[in-house]
Length: 181
Length: 181
DNA sequence: GCACACTATGTCAGAACTGACATAGTGGGA
DNA sequence: TCCCACTATGTCAGTTCTGACATAGTGTGC
Image 1 (cartoon, each protein chain N blue to C red):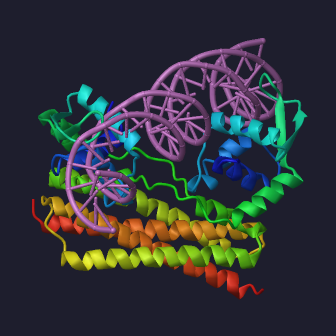
Image 2: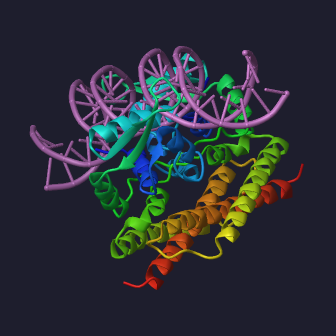
């Protein structure tokens, strides 16, 4: 019954208690590299998780019309999360707009197309540099069992992905240049 | 106004006229590697594209309660598609369930986790082998401007992606094995 | 003392997507 | 001749996601 967003929230809460606002911030970065959600989605999902007994909260005095709610995992929530982790992921359909554009690229002006891929290349190179800096700060992978292993392993995935993307953009630019004009 | 799904349909129609059924089949493979849609979505979108004058159709006698409709791009549709191709892609949020599981993997039993990644590795190796077979059938990249360039370039992207994924799964398995149990 | 950025929670309308249901002609094989 | 797989179009309910709107306390600097 719990949606993947629900598990994303449980996964963050497993590292410590958070407010909905904190969760929304976490869902931008670093979790945001592989799962994002707006705060409106998060508050709604928290209410569902609460109804299912997977999370609880302590009300605290704080900003906003409703004060502040600090959420935490319950024993049930932790058990559900643990069971979910090793189940095969539900296949999500690939939806990559740049690749779709590439599929239709034979229709485009070569100059504009080179511009598109040059911009994408720059963006991916920048992200790659960021990830490499982050990786250097780790100084090698933590052992599995350490929460930081989760961060490192996802970062490693991101590094590989950005390298792949950079290589592909370069390959595209070569193809587009060698064909003249 | 036109959604990305709309452009996906236009991109397929740019290669020749199709029925909604043909489009649904195309959205499974090969376009399906980077954009998928169910037939219910496609029929609804075709009606919107038709209302916007981007596609037209010829009614033919055929199966089903409504007969058969063979859709084609209009001049407006081609112009919109051309303009869209070189515009920067709208950033779509990353939502990768396997990476999310990885983020929470420090909570899991190592044996079950190895099983998960071994299965994923096998799946990606299989896809990679398929793509390599397809690539060999091309015998080198067609020139940009050729519709087949779109197919080849997206295939090349898929090859890079699967290689990245295979490497990452192997790296994970190494990490998980070296930590004992 | 005031303005402003940040913290904090929520609702709602609408778009995008999924999966089930409904209907019916065509062509090939037993 | 009958059955079945395939071709073919469509609706609908429900879920997920996005972006705008609404509200209000807290802490910092001028």
